Length: 319
Ligand code: NAD
Image 1 (cartoon, rainbow, N blue to C red):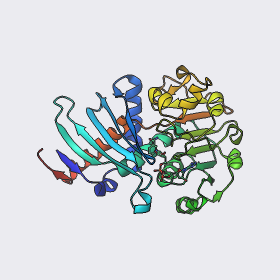
Image 2 (cartoon, rainbow, N blue to C red; image 1 turned 45 degrees about the horizontal axis):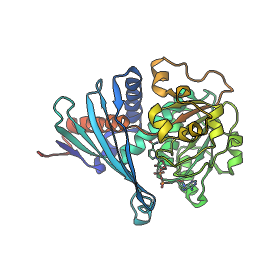
Image 3 (cartoon, rainbow, N blue to C red; image 1 turned 90 degrees about the vertical axis):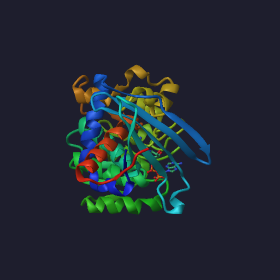
Image 4 (spheres, helix red, strand yellow; image 1 turned 60 degrees about the vertical axis):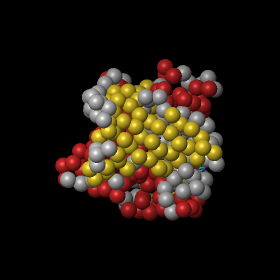
């Protein structure tokens, strides 16, 4: 098997690669060629979470698992809060083929999913990007969003305002004016990305204008919540995978409150394959509930492995 360490990933997989790989994966899921196995996610106490996301993509020839979790105390130790490793196996024999550092890949594949939703569901004339959250993932999200729409400015809110400077620096790098705003001013945004580890809604229904597209990316576990359930009640809701959306995604709260039924949630892959038209009117609010599926991880990890093999990089070991 090939070990592809975290330190090599940045040189092997670009944000554009991740976008293409995740798009292909969502489309394969929609066609029924790929499916995710049930997620295992355990609370370890003191806010630590650990779990396994896995799946099989017959079209891409990928079988594997991402083992990883969220450790909120890590930042104080100088390491990122998300820690993960992807393991790939030969789908015909079950033999392990690769072990791949999953930190950067997670950020790239998560930002790619969000950007695909913006690309396919936001209004073409979207000019103001709203960011809710300013942690490790937020910069990747901002960069990926800026690739798919011609934004003219960025407005941002974070519970911990001192973290906003770092996000502002990313906006400056992209040449975008950046302003820290109260949540009420998210009404100015055409696209809003939420990427926090919040346990309760920050963004309320009244903070969102008609015609907005939201990419809700932070809620990936039971008990997390970023937006008011009423917002999902009035939005056209899309997701990576419905089973995850209703159980560990943002939709868990709206479904529990009886404001949204699982049958009303559309897989984003259906928009990619043309099975669903996507946004129907300029006034519609569209909301992508990005829960993060194992197949996304396998797709970008497989790409990293292919590139490493082509270039003779990585460490080959026999188990
Ligand atoms: P981080 O720890 O670097 O940042 C956490 C962010 O949440 C910060 O902006 C912080 O200010 C904010 N926050 C913390 N407590 C809050 C509260 N009570 N209310 C509102 N905001 C609060 O985390 P990160 O790596 O940027 O990840 C952010 C979230 O995204 C996490 O919940 C993580 O699990 C999730 N995530 C989802 C996917 C996916 O595929 N959907 C992938 C990776 C990460």
